[in-house]
Structures are given as C-alpha cells and as structure tokens.
Length: 174
Image 1 (cartoon, rainbow, N blue to C red):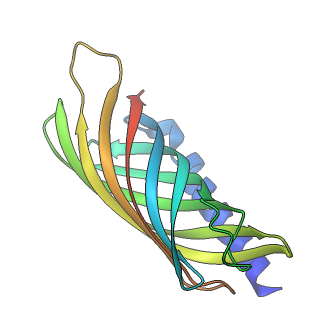
Image 2: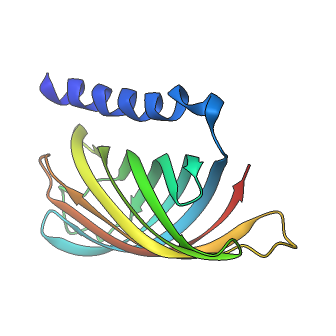
C-alpha cells in the first residue's frame, strides 16, 4: 500500500533529522501546547481541541528543525458519519525564529502524516502544516511561553479536512 510507505517514509525522515545531528547541536527545544480550532471536516464546519508536543534541535538560534505531534479531538456534532473520532498527526517541521533572546516571533511549516480514526477504521492522510506566533522568555524564568496560530491542510485521504487553530504553549530550551 503506497500510503503506508509514505507514512513510514515521513516518520523515518523526521526522526533521522532529529537524531542524526543531535551530537553537534547548539540546543534542544520542547513545547507542549493546547489549541482551540475551527475545523472543516468532510464539508461541515465544527470545533476541535488539540493537544500538541513540539520537539526540535537548534543548530543556530534562528532555526529549529523538529517534529510536531498532535492529538486532535473534533467536537461531536452528531450530524456527520464521516467525521473522525480522533486525528493523530506527526509532522517534521522547520521553524524560523526572529527577535531577541527574551522575546521572539516565529513561523513554521512542515509536511507529515495524520491518521483519522473513524468508526469504520483508519484513514491515513498526508498533511501540510503551517503556523506562526510569539514567545516570551524572561531570563528570570527557566521556561518560555507564548501563543501561536496554526493550520492544517490534508493533501490526500478520504475525508477532506482543513483545521485553523489558536493556542498557547509553555516550553523549555536545553
């Protein structure tokens, strides 16, 4: 099945990107996040909540090479049999950071895989993700925090899905 090979290839590429250069890294980043989203799933507009985790390697302060993982829970409307019960997503991403050490903005983009869990089974899809936001990192705190706007667009799959979200995160630089 071509979709399985695509999923395995994307996951392997993302993990190799993180692991291959870990020894020479300038730092690592870890950001758990929560988003409230507006989702168009199979033609219907609904709300969704997602829990995410971003991890990345910073070869230089302005660039992060990482992996975004998310668990998206569509809020049930009871109207659409094609609506997924749950969406699992993993995307290798590139972040570009700009600003000062104590406050910076960022944009990110990536291409990865998602699995739509529907009553009938699993629908694997390829997704494009993008986002941007602002981070505050006071030197007096051991962590940073911020907000982001993010979006997802399914490229393949049986259920057409678009997600636009706004959320917040707390993170650590190691």
